[in-house]
Length: 411
Image 1 (cartoon, rainbow, N blue to C red):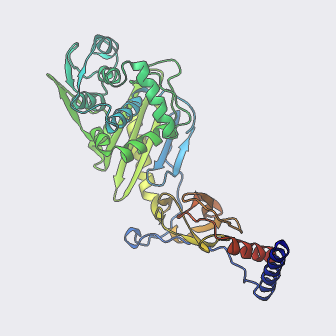
Image 2: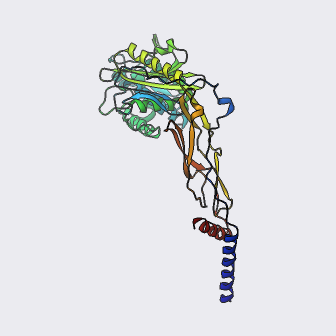
Image 3: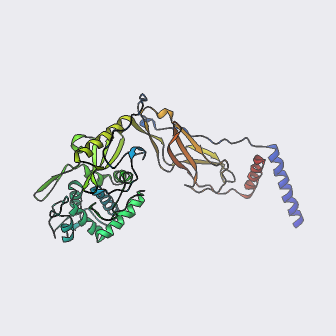
């Protein structure tokens, strides 16, 4: 019996080799993707103009980013860790919103203005304050607006104590969420931005934070466009003067200490495009505002953002060996957007880098290769290509047949 089985296997193998020689498959070229934005999102054709240098900015560091694509349009010293002053409170807002989304706190929670918060951040200090009464409570939502609009240090500390039990414990949460947002050059020691050892962030990190707040918690972000807020008998204006100068500006936060200088994170949305600017270490309130406005105007005038591919939608189909099916659809996990100079969209050159041979099994979401988008020889966007479906291994005979075909192609 064993000899008959061996003879049968040998015959099958000989037959498969014969088929391999008789039916050599044609080479399977790797498909190349091309930009296919949705028709509704295509901007009217515009003449390509040379992009002039960005405006001259007074400050230690600054950046301009597109919120949708994440492309840095211009900047200087963008990754240098610096004192962020009260822009810190954007991180405080993000943590509160995230903890609220997780059910840890509610907007109706009664937050106590503790003596500690009042002494460290209240009216008796040199910093900005909200005016909530010491040893009395206020709804969390009201306390947060006092922090956001009035930049109240007292409100920030009280909120931190309510959410995490102490300001130091809250700072630990800030650092955890900062890591999730990709903020690589930041460390938070308090909820206010008051001078503290090792309390640092960068222009790039703060722009990522502003983009993250607008994207993840739009309602919380919207508090930043409130122009004034009243606590008891005290009404205070929002210190972001761009809210009065430019109707497209809807945030986000000012900051100032003697060590940090004058700082401003600004954001504006025109049509479907949002830009975020950060200026750190400026010389005055007027200078930080005029420079931020100039950056936003320059960015909107000379750049536009397009969606090349939807997330989880096939951009290419690749040959697959030894699988239950013979092809594998590839795409990007999230929408791929790119910001380019106006009028240059048609000149984008997308390319794919995918292994020549793909063999099952394949897991859904498995990284297979890379799609790059080039302009003038430079990479303007790069994302992993992932498998859009799982593919199990084929049966024994199909795997054997594919093994022979792969051997034949390699010779």
